[in-house]
Image (tube, rainbow, N blue to C red; front, top):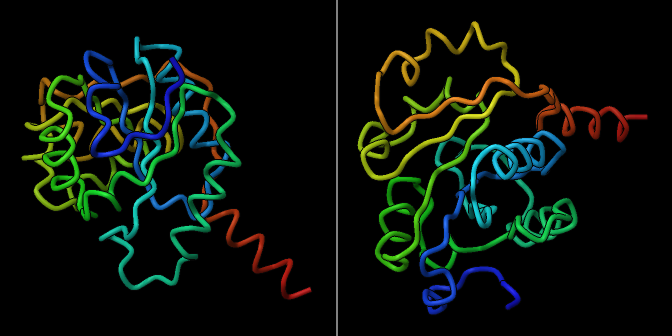
Length: 192
């Protein structure tokens, strides 16, 4: 059976599947994102990862970003693994805050097992997410190593918050590429 991007009305297709949720602005998507997803697929028993392109990141409300459709296109071009499915599920659900998205996904896909996947860099900012501690009670989290250095993350609120719903994977090759670096290089190229 071929799997297509999840739709609100396609819940039976995802019944009893183990899905990793990997969300972000993806401005632009890069090898670091692929690294996190590939590591999650390799180290855990996910059937698929839903790469959730957000219509609007609440932590980046005042930043100018490319259109949602452009970021969806870039993400689809970047992801070559058939088990990484780029989706507009947040747009379908009309959510943009992680806590609202997770609650809505669980409501629409009640027989699917979900885990939220993030790079280790997101552990440093998790405490800025709306209702972040409530989010940890809604869904298990899997943080996968990528810069910043692991010793910086040891003292971040998510690491100090001894929650049973958080798993950490450190034993992987680090990929330091970031969307910010790519955007900065693009600006330099445009100047010259």
